[in-house]
Structure formats: structure tokens, C-alpha cells
Length: 215
Ligand code: HEM
Image (cartoon, rainbow, N blue to C red; front, side, top):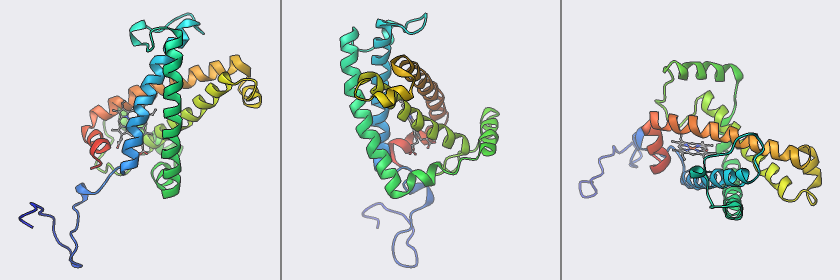
């Protein structure tokens, strides 16, 4: 034991018992898909703002320094490349999450009264994050919400890309113009989520370490 430098206690069955803080908080597939997703989303936002600026929907444009691709065609190339990365990576996360039961275990149930209680506690700085392996109701609502926003943004993007082949989907979203609005507001929701999410991660650095190293 001294040779390995391992000082974990040995339990009655002779196997080494892991102290609670050493157990895996986020499985490897969650950490890998999370960071690939973060990269894809940042590329999609930058290139999406480039595409938006070429034909703004509202009376403003995004600062050029925050856009990606240099011009409309460059933005489109980045946007489609990152879209496939987001979709493939998202499918891996959802399929493994459903197959292992982890998605249901971590994100459900979400009770509105619990969300209100935990958001109020978080705003008052009283929300405990002692147990990183379990999400509070505010996190559950945010994570389930952003997963839903992900589905909506991909569906509305597909409806704009192939409005003829996917005309039922496009019609459901109010045609090309409706899909464009839905896509924009889903982006706004994801950007808002990202701001809150990154601030929370920086406020609880242990949670950031757990999403990188697993423990
Ligand atoms: C780029 C900066 C990002 C940072 C620093 C970051 C950080 C983190 C951290 C630390 C956690 C663990 C939270 C905890 O244990 O309390 C987490 C979980 C999560 N993040 Fe992020 N994140 C980032 C980007 C994103 C993006 C872009 C999305 C989606 C649009 C996202 C969606 C999620 C989800 C859904 C979870 C829960 C995952 C699960 O347990 O299955 N994150 N993130």
C-alpha cells in the first residue's frame, strides 16, 4: 500500500472503500459530451451572429468582434460544421443518459415549488452545494430547459434549411419567418442560460473541477 501511496481504508470484504469525495461525480461520457457541446455552442453563437448581421431580424446587429467566419459564407460554413457536431454529440449524451437512467435520476422530478424555493435560496446566497453529485431544483429546471431549447433550436434550424422537404415542421413553427423567430429566441434563451451557468460554475469552483476531472 505504501508503494502505491494509496491510503484508502480497506473494508470488511477486503476491497478498498472510497471516501465519498473520491467517488465519480460526473461519468466520463458526461464530461466529454459536456465540453464538446460547450465548444459547439460557442461556435454556433459566433457564426449565428455573423449570419444574423448579414440580414438582421431586429433593429440591431451583434458586434463584429463577437462574430465568427469573417463574412456570411464563412459564418454559414462554421454554423453547419458545428451544428453536426452539436447534433451527433447531443445524441450520444441523450442515448447514454436514457440507457443508463442517469438523465431521469439527475433531472427528474422537477417540482415548481422546489424550483421557486431553490431559486430564492440561490439569490439570497443560501443554496448549499455540499453534495455535487445531486442537482438542486433550480439546476434541474435550468438543465432540462436548456436541453429543450437545444431541441427547439435544432428543429427550427432544420425547418429554415430545408423548408420544402420539411414543410410539416416548417408549418408547425409558423413557416420560414416563424422558424427564424423561434430560432432567434431559442438562441437568446441559451445565451442567457450560459451567462447564469458560467457565473454559477465560477462561484462554485469545486463543481467546475468535478466537470473536468470527474471528482
Ligand atoms: C463554456 C462554459 C461552460 C462551463 C464553464 C460549464 C460548466 C459546467 C459545470 C461546472 C457543470 C456541473 C454543474 C454542477 O455540478 O453543479 C455543468 C453541467 C452542465 N452544463 Fe455546463 N458549462 C459550460 C457550457 C455549457 C453549455 C454551452 C451548455 C448547453 C448549452 C451546458 C449545459 C450543461 C448541462 C446540461 C449540465 C448538466 C449535465 C449533466 O449532469 O448531465 N454547459 N456545466
